[in-house]
Length: 118
Image 1 (spheres, one colour):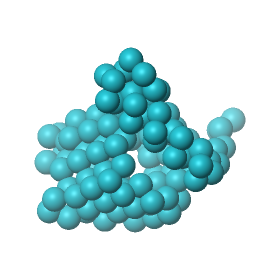
Image 2 (cartoon, helix red, strand yellow; image 1 turned 90 degrees about the vertical axis):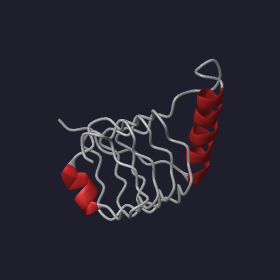
Image 3 (cartoon, helix red, strand yellow; image 1 turned 30 degrees about the horizontal axis):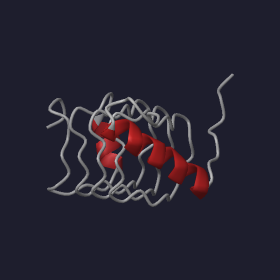
Image 4 (cartoon, helix red, strand yellow; image 1 turned 135 degrees about the vertical axis):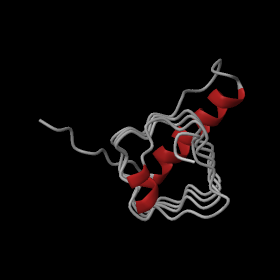
């Protein structure tokens, strides 16, 4: 049986992002790595968000704004990326990102892709 995507409030998302920022800045000594696997993030405003090394496995990112977001090393395995804004986003070393996901997303010349897709 498939797990249903989980809902998350704006407040909960902000808390996850804050704890993740602390985790990144402290190199894992404080805060907590963002785990947004199987989370519905439809239309979420994540412009400029630091989601480096975040777990976004099977996350629904459709219509989300991730313009200029830091997604270096993020796990995007089977994330749903239809019309997600990745303009200027840094996807360097992103895990399990596919050509199909990139083709479904909105990208530009400033979007940095993993070497295996460049």
